[in-house]
Image (cartoon, rainbow, N blue to C red; front, side):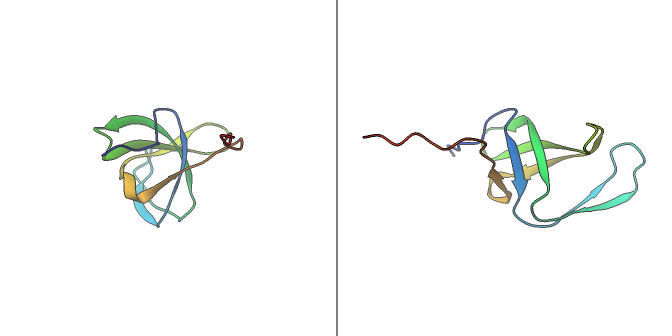
Length: 81
């Protein structure tokens, strides 16, 4: 499956995902819209996503299927004339 999501892209969850804190093991719920960074790809069908706090401390690292993510954009796409 071809996807527009690439390594190091910022992505957001499309649905709530249960997780465990990367360091403490405490249960977490990552809400729909939680932002993460793609750190590994699995043949384009899923991505390993790191979720971090505002200070850059990773609190979760999870494989997420491509259908569960949306790529975030920080600039408009160019339009062909």
